[in-house]
Length: 439
Picture 1: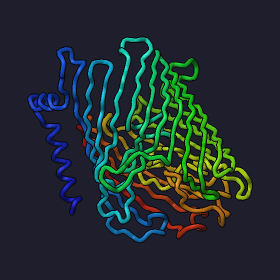
Picture 2: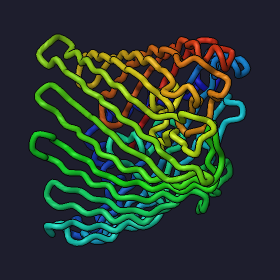
Picture 3: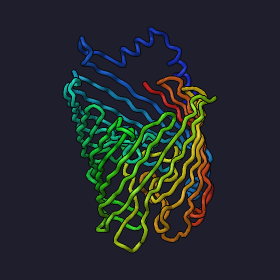
Picture 4: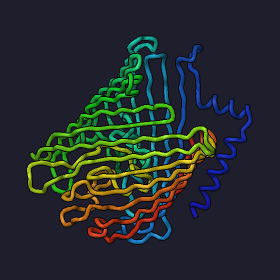
């Protein structure tokens, strides 16, 4: 019933937003942007977005979960206020509210009634200085590179944030960040996502643009400490250090993104030695009908090699985007080898149809598979098979203007021999609709 009511309401809002007159548009701009000084350097602005999603699973968790014939609905509201005083001072406050209708035992990542998502202060030197410096302190989002390791987590209902101090520097084609933070763990109450002492996250991230031959280059160090970490073969306190590099850019119609990193540290006294390497390349036929794009992505992500030695090789993806392999978010990036060809058709700049196939195998036979949040899905201790499964997906995206976003997605994962060993082994069918309005 809620679907019947809310969907037409969102569509009416979209139609109204596109049909507004110039007078209405000027009124909207006056409300959204309020100058507080004659030169406009001091101002107050407001914004937000509402996202509504309907998801349906057949054989969720490969048939191990009870059947759900109706699916469930997710909704998220983000609203913010942003005050700038000259070029040197800024304060930003954002509230987040999310709900999960028809979702039994929904986690706080999906169901969190009202929280302070961001609240930070920026202190900056003058924007005309050759070396631009900004110090940001408070609750904030972190996002770096391709968001394989540090993301705003747009896929799930709740975006993630950190209580952090961050220094940002920029000079010509170089950007550098240094930060120290506590991860903010979601809870189901109202304004109860409090300061979290259990997870520390810190690091340095450098981005160099217009590098000869290479294009773009990222170099980074990321540190993580968790009081309670759990993997297939061990539980305990985790201290992990990640050093990595990323090459990205384009050459004509080609886009490329390659990344590699190594992790070390210890978990409960056992040494960490983990790594990952990925390559993502895409070619666009710009002069052809529908401007088709063809791409391929492949990843090698380490898993634990032996159960009874003093080493842990399971890779920790830290804080990645939630829908790592699509909105269905069936598995996460740990102990994995995958090959991912994809294709797209662009009917216009506002409309696209995408297709992709993912072939998944376990990298190590002595480790299990994990969710996007590193939670263990199925152990590898009693399994001998490597093939996890093959995932086939298609999605349609429509963005007629900056304020409206529509996406429909269908995913089918055919369970492989490993999943048939450790679970009910049923194939998963997933369907989803996302409607998002931005203010």
